[in-house]
Image (cartoon, rainbow, N blue to C red; front, side, top):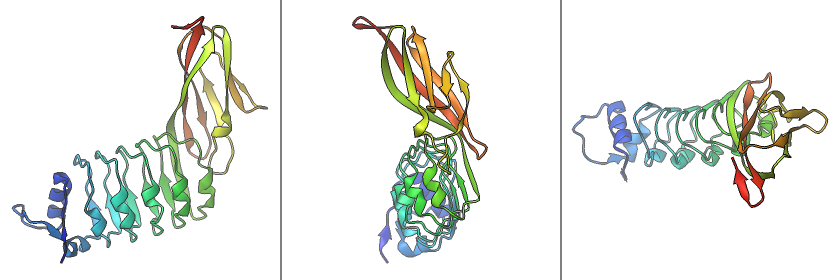
Length: 242
């Protein structure tokens, strides 16, 4: 049987424990060993790499929350997964999940995700948690006909620094914000006397004299909310003024 090398010592030790192997086990795992796993919960273990986990193809439930994971490519082979929790990590890309067509529960909250287009192929999904990320567009989720609950609160979205002349203004279109039904959310707070134009669906700040971070908050009744931050530098002559 082919050997499987688990590089991450925390992942390795956790699998040894789950398989009830002796703690003194030093040799590599076999593919047969990993095929014995149907449920795996390894949270709060400081795991950075999940390389080798791609051979655990009989997994139906996987919890890797509260670790230090960036790359989730090995998960792409786990086609039998129904429950996946990879919340509270450092994940930016979800493309590896696009082929997991049996998923019914997915939690990717508290990561650094900006795009969820790859989730529109998860037709069996019933529950999705994408809260505390950097997501502004949920409209592709409208294709998920079985999705009952979607938590998407506390998105934190930064806009590139804008340079504005002193006493000038800045307008940002809210067309970038879409809930799962393609509608724009409600604006419930704007900093620094900014103005929301319901006709143009935009937020504007006028007579700007101070370089700083401006922001506004949005919310829908469907569990989608967040904060948009715009760093504005005020320019006078050839220099930025504070």
